[in-house]
Amino acid sequence: MVILLSDLPDSVKKQELKKLVEQYHPVKQVSPCAEYEGKCVEWRVELGDTDREVANYVTDRLNGAYWKGCHLNAYCPVFQ
Image (tube, rainbow, N blue to C red):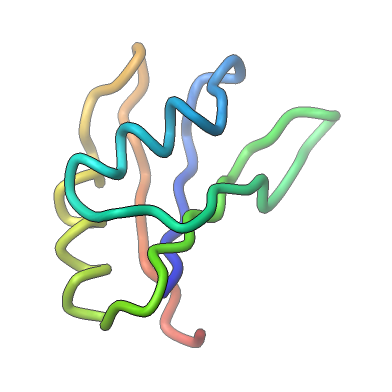
């Protein structure tokens, strides 16, 4: 299952995101998903073989959270 994270600081690193999400569930992989003017504007976080209920739990915990000076936008795409 995949979740997407956006509205993050430009300086964020993969390991920082992994550590943030792993507070709620183990992470299989973190990768840039969308770029604009050479900067990553959206990150793809692979949670592995989990179900939608777990992914929704993680996004509920992260969505709107204040982290490194930004309010996170987290969601789980409907079609995966």
